[in-house]
Length: 380
Image 1 (cartoon, rainbow, N blue to C red):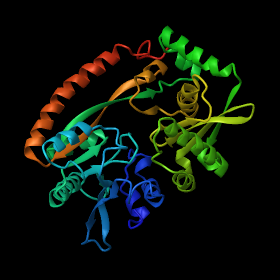
Image 2 (cartoon, helix red, strand yellow; image 1 turned 135 degrees about the horizontal axis):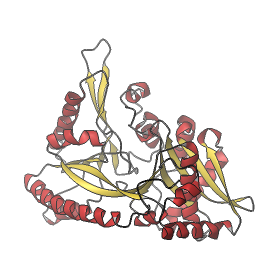
Image 3 (cartoon, helix red, strand yellow; image 1 turned 120 degrees about the vertical axis):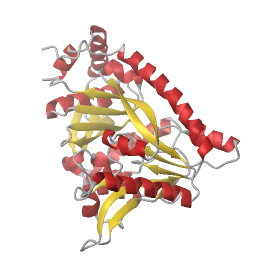
Image 4 (tube, helix red, strand yellow; image 1 turned 90 degrees about the vertical axis):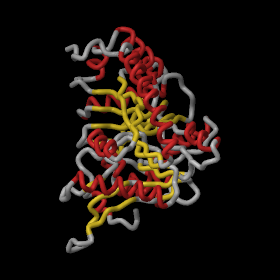
């Protein structure tokens, strides 16, 4: 991204592209070595340039990586890799169009508003498939594209795959109690019990906009974030310099929540905020002390309260997690798109995805029966 002018890249982003596609975010990942050499994320961004313009202009782009593994994607294809290995074929490297470590929807086929959108999308997808073929890669994958890109992907013979996340939606709630009033009695009582459990031990919460955050705030946040990984015996994908980079380059999109007891910080979570799209993304949480129900308070309830105060419409709490439904979240179906170079494997994966699609539809129907809301209308 250091070779791409920030203004040229950001000019390709439409109103619903989201903050994760900003040049600042992707550049931070590279500059702080979260992706690149030694990470399994080889940088290979795809650009379309108009060389006949007065000044060579970037008219289309795709955030692209060559992957040596499937970590940090949140669309799981380990079984596909194993099937390749069993047949003596290499699944890795593969081409991946995605935002690293970030399971949120957004534009993936970036097109300048001055050019024909459909034509540039077609060129991007054709170039992606050529890159796969010329470099003898197994496949190309586009994760969590915007719904308006699905038609172009299907026309380019990409196979679609469903996944389910859980999002909270604001129905013009006046405050947190108004939100609770719209839940079933069981859910409402459960949330009040969980909140009381941490309130009774004297927890307090500090909301810090990115523009007001300090290096000390980020030091503590990172300590919490890294501890979450250590407790699961793994290494964090991101490092402190990356978060400090975001604080310096896109503070308007950051919101920290820090939980304290007796004025001592205990836990922290980070929201990425897109006020134009009225959306908050719950990205990372951690604590230096285990306190029952504190995760739900800091990562969910404080974030919901913030969204209500700020008039944000949607809160995306991250990948997976049926337990979110008990906290007022509802299921959303997202998509990924896959182009498999080997014709026989392509047919086999297409059959698998057909069966999986039916299973996912039944799963979503089952989840809908457990909808935590009393009705689709706000109870005033």
